[in-house]
Length: 256
Image 1 (cartoon, rainbow, N blue to C red):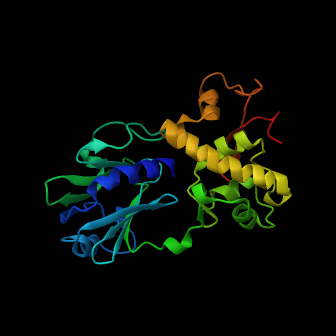
Image 2 (spheres, rainbow, N blue to C red):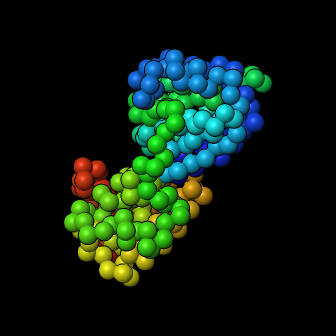
């Protein structure tokens, strides 16, 4: 989500520009239709707005249609040959044009492209925004309580469910739960009202903090895990495990 918000800000540079050509060389990267249909749908259209909901970047076009861009863990956005983010945790920094999976060319000669070494992102026409939950930056305690419900699933699993809370990825979830002093493996329904309020507050605050730092890979707990492996708060050895199938770092002392 943090990276996609940075991409949204970069994509503002293409608002008002008209698309004169589309390159979609990787059919796998185009979701729900054929590349030729995407090319036909957006060629000649002007970009009216760039929006984000969760991890989805949406370009609104002048005929009322929408182009959805997803980046996965390894996709980067480039506008006019400038990268919005230089480094991603799980991706390469190499400028390899073979990794350019999708490109819009504008009437002024500039372009927008997605460079994705592992092909984990994708593009689609008319993405279903209704499938996404409330955006993490707009989350309230009531929203969070509804998202958690009476589920016995680990709290981290619930936070990563984009249909319930849109925009939280694996690294960000670890940082949020570290800041909220909540064990990632605790059953979602075990949180009391005060904990829900604290967690909702930490979600919004951590998202804003990580965005200001430049992305989810800048988090304190992940940095500690890759250096001395000690909790930055109390010095206890961090625990590495899998929660919901995702690699997870947490402190066994203050996260309960």
